[in-house]
Image (cartoon, rainbow, N blue to C red):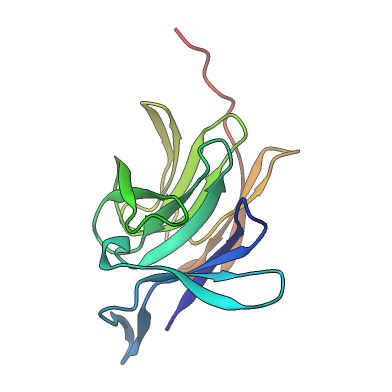
Length: 173
């Protein structure tokens, strides 16, 4: 219905979220039962890897190689951060935040970076430590340049892409 984000999984296949949204007038409406993650293998065969209302309009997706799972963030107003292992019948909740997520990326040092339309932020989660870059209207899916430690974040309602430096990891106290 509304293919949204794509990443490469641990098996080398592409995984794509379907947020289940479609235009309705000047807004977007959710189509019940359309929350899915598709898998496209090397031979270009597409299958439904997971279909579940518990995905809550899945938007961003990234592969967590060390956890052997996907991190999936919903656009619905539920403030959940989800993890899903291929083959599992449902995702599990691994954290909470502001909700209405769009982008998600995982850095090599295990910091999780998320964008949220609910509070106009990029959140950086390092275990129990959370920091935020605020006042980013309509922050969409993000791109990460790990060599330069930059985040490219489209601001959809502003018609621009901002480049933001990823703050250094804080030392343990």
